[in-house]
Amino acid sequence: MYLAIEALFSATDKRYLTGDELKMLGRYSLSLPHRLKIYRQLRSQELSLFQAIADEMEAKLPEEPQENLERSLKGGVSALRQCAMAMLVNDVDLMADQLRWLKSTQANYDSQAIDTLLFSLLHRQLEQLLAPKQMKFFETFYQPLQAL
Image (cartoon, helix red, strand yellow):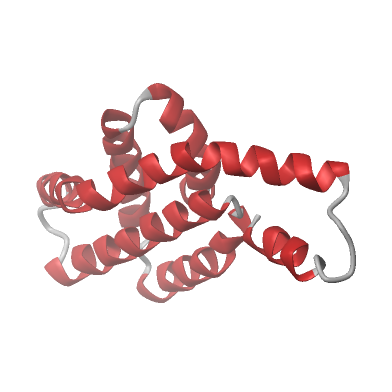
């Protein structure tokens, strides 16, 4: 959406927006308060979300080296932030680079099992944090992480 809006605004010196373009812009602007609320919730609760996840990962993977858990958690924080931004600007394609980076990290460190656990725990935490309607809305942007 961000690129679509940018393209709309860059074309304004040549023409007026079409009816469909105005509808798209209107839908996005009407959904912006909802997006901002979710984004702010995620931002303000990030530390508590990931502390709970870290505690549970340490309990479930007691033999896993701390370095591996920390690497996975850092990747999870980065991924959640990228999801939140993608949701805010309504552009799921923003996740492409993050997904490539996570896949390469998993291959380099053989961390797919740890990451799978992390994103499963994160999903559960998000379901507790967000209202069902918010979670359903955010799920579109979070789904690519669960498919890793």
